[in-house]
Image (cartoon, rainbow, N blue to C red; front, side, top):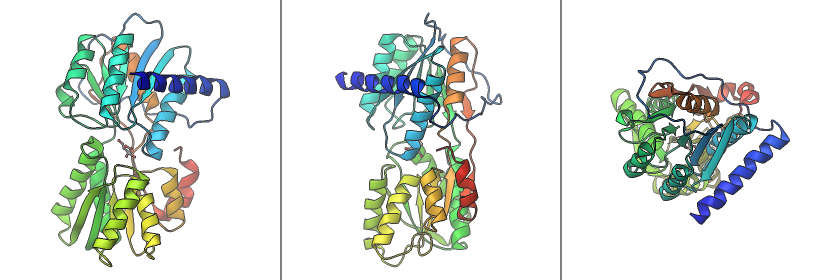
Amino acid sequence: MKKVLSLFLVALLAVTMLAGCGETTPPAAENTPAASNPAVEVPPADNGNDKLVVGFAQIGQESGWRDAETNDIMWYAAQNIDTIELHFADAQQKQENQINAIKAFIDMGVDVIGLPPVVSTGWDAIFAEANEAGIPIILVDRNIEGWEDMEGVTFIGSDVILEGQNAAEEIATLLGGSGNIVELQGTVGSSAANDRYKGFHDRIEEKYPDIKVLDSQSGDFTRAGGKQVMESFLKTYPGQIDAIYAHNDDMVLGAIEAIKEAGLRPGEDIKTVSCDGVRAIFEAMIAGEANVTVECSPLLAAQFFQAAQDLKDGKSLPKFIQADEDVYRRETAEADLPNRKY
Ligand code: AHR
């Protein structure tokens, strides 16, 4: 608990600093909640606080994408400091820390809790506590098993299975329909890794019988993890790997280092497709070392705080609020880079 509280202080300090020093972080996405989903019953969120009081239990800092999401949340809260009070915890990739943070938010009596869950199971008890306290939970960018049927739970994020399907189509195009690939999976047990795996494998099995997945292992969504796993793939399958599919850009950036150290040309000898769309992958594409990124936007703050305010105001929300996403290729990376916000 001591650790969580000190993390709150660091984060709150960061919010205050952002408010003081002006708009240095990217503006939030302009999406508004889609009205296409059926409304759900949620517990009343107004806990008598004047401001909208939000607890946000972030996973950690495993990737550039995650940092962009954190910056966006903090930037938005800092811009609206008169109406929003943000309590932020960095759980350092541990579910236990996220659960402790949620407990602390419940004790504080926040209006709404925001949670990008590090893994997709093991939340029943703490979600029941929040529900009993009348505090709704907004899942951000990742979901959990059974979320569709949970009372007081809304999900804001991307269609991650579609990202996996899009990645499969891009790999098939790069390989002309046949070749060997290796896969770098995200954090084991996370919905982002499960869904990117499912969307990709289902599509390859359905449409591309001549594409073979030689191996698939987790690099935990980190650059160091991606490099380490790729080093081992290169030793196990010398001269056999035509492409990598990575569940995020950071892992492919690590893999690019491993490929270069092995004397091969990333983006040429071994093609790459990854997910996220961080600036660093656009730079790698411009350098000719990466091929495709399937976007997954971390700029969810505007949608998140709007949804939280709606809950506080007693409005009903769609169960799923979808973020926008696109696919970006090396050919247009130079023109695209100036427009990237993360
Ligand atoms: O949940 C989204 C994933 O989490 C992003 O793809 C990854 O980079 C992040 O850490």
